[in-house]
Length: 611
Ligand code: F6R
Image (cartoon, rainbow, N blue to C red; front, side, top):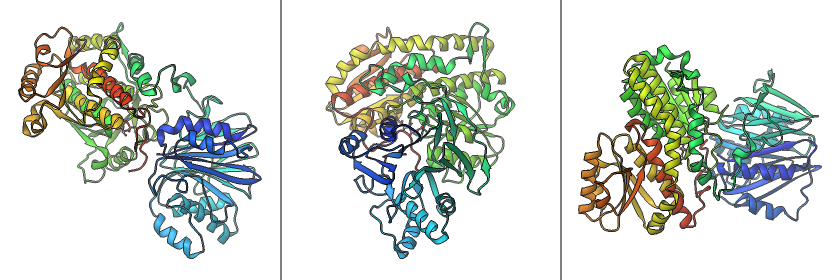
């Protein structure tokens, strides 16, 4: 996690860096700092948000045309001023910012302490910058060479930027495992963890690859591998719009992103669902169609909300394409000894495309010969580049830490995938395919309608804002939705919530139910409807407070529930795209009413690049 930004050029560096850090705060926000190179090498850093840093440096001399900044999500060492980045080397002649983890930092630190290096923080990053200083001293070499040699000694993940007082016109960056993008302007360069701090200055970017070192001096960018082999920078055009990374009149990014869903779902189908022509296309699978058709098994790896989208896909792919599916937490999968063969397809799902556990699971599956298909939102991200093929979700930048529109876009793409593969395998008939295509094309309008529930849900939220616990129940396609509803609530409102398959409740969680327990039951009209009605009865008999999400026009459940939320009817296999909307709104309003920081919940970060 952590966000890094740097600038070198003719403009004032500090305002660009601060603005960039605000855009990257979703990656971490427990402390922030800047280093500015202007003859002197000044580091200013502070525990807290970028606003705290800005207040702290208001009276300082920040004039510089070269600089770098960091917003932190703590790994080594608690959030405080001294653990904040940038870090100086012992001589204070070199400074570094770092996103990632240096795994062998303890051994390196002991060695460096013996050489006389003194440490001010508990971080692994300070070890990195002292290692560079020590190597430069021992070898009497250039800073660039010292960085290159240091990269051979560190084990772990990094995106770093290094500045030195002795090289006042130069900026050095390197990456392995953590993202790094360079924006190429006219005689100026912008570096960042993603393109959002860059987009307003230039749309030409270079994605730095693992084990590459970028040196920028005299208006030129030189990229070399760790083995010192020069590379030709591949400049790509960004397609992102500035509007898409601003709040656009909404109080929070999360609310904006919830309301963007009719559009983002449509974007994720664009060019893929051609209703009039009766075609489904997905460029990413074309070359792998035979593999999908003959797959003996599909293994899905993902984390968090993306894992919930994977669970929906398990129902979809098994239902429509009749291929056995296993859904794995990437973090567990990578550390057991999974049985994977060349006939398996591994589907990796990730909004950020940077999740360390998902990346590691991909590498493991690759080493066993499986075909890896990625479903990512962030274009050019590490996972998108590590997979054999894939499909972007095209949901647009998701900035609120709690994932909303990314989930529905993932489910949409997975639905299309299941439909395409099912049709090719002959398990989905022409008429059923056509029926689903029509219904899928109606989903954006149904989501729009579900969003009209906003005021009603805000009122329900008032009633439950102070409860300590919530239970979410669902069956079949709505079971992953129950999990997702519970995750949304706990991560932004800090209310303990559990999602459960409705029928499993009687094997334990039913003991929790009394007159104080709110139970959200997703009970839309589908093949398990009657059974879920029985589960509602079981909750009611124990005086649980039922909030039921039902299909419009339901007359059976309303008399049993304290609150009823009606969503538009749709096909059972598409229902998660609609039934998740009120749950997103419920968590949002409860969190706002509790005074929580919805877009930046405590202890979380948007992009989890550490394991
Ligand atoms: C929850 C949330 C996280 C992410 C998880 C995976 O709202 O955002 O649970 O879903 O960290 O992230 P990605 O999808 O970027 O791999």
